[in-house]
Amino acid sequence: MLRVLVLVSGGGTNLQAIIDKVADGTVTNTEIVGVISNNYGVYSLERAANAGIPAEVVSPKDYPDRSSFNRALLAKLEDYKPDLIVLAGFLVVIPEIVIQKYEGRIINIHPSLIPSFCGTGYYGLHVHKAALERGVKVSGATVHFVDAGTDTGPIILQKAVYVEDGDTPEILQRRIMEQAEWEILPQAINLIARGEVKYVKKPDMRS
Ligand code: GRF
Image 1 (cartoon, rainbow, N blue to C red):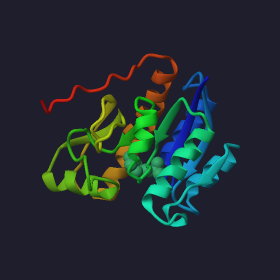
Image 2: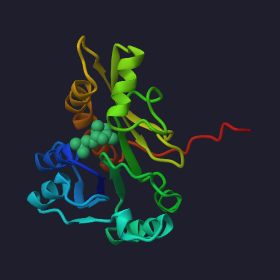
Image 3: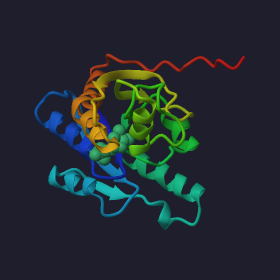
Image 4: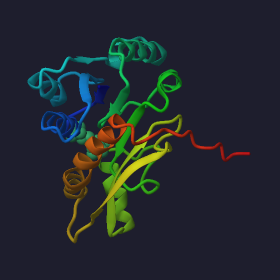
């Protein structure tokens, strides 16, 4: 069984998609061993509780500085002995000490077709606002492994979604979640659980 730990910051619709697809057998050989949120009071925590999954908060607000938060987060992750860490709308930049320990075992869902509309500052509605401002006719979502950069790790799955006349960032966000994110994030976990995806570190292109 692949031990999956899900990290969240908000409402947790992606978490719910994973829970549902593990429960109905679409995602095989997978156990969700825990949910960690960096925010108190978010609906993700209730979703975990409703599914009987242990959930807890590790908030930067509870630590005097970033490096002590980073160490606490790493210690908490280690408690769950995860085979795979899934960032499902987790808005904290993953600390270097976590990447060093778990590189190749962390995946993220990003709400655009990388390399468009990604990198620093492109999160939440900012992504969809930028896509609409640029006037793209197609956007979508990407599941990728997490490396030391922002949205730079190897891509696992992508799915395109049409932009429609009259879209607002909110409408486009919702369509991309429904048509792409909730589908490809569980699908990527299933591929990893079945051993059908292997992490290959990207070559360093700087030299
Ligand atoms: C999703 O759009 C995800 O791609 C982004 O944050 C949102 C999370 O939504 N990174 P939810 O908490 O899973 O509902």
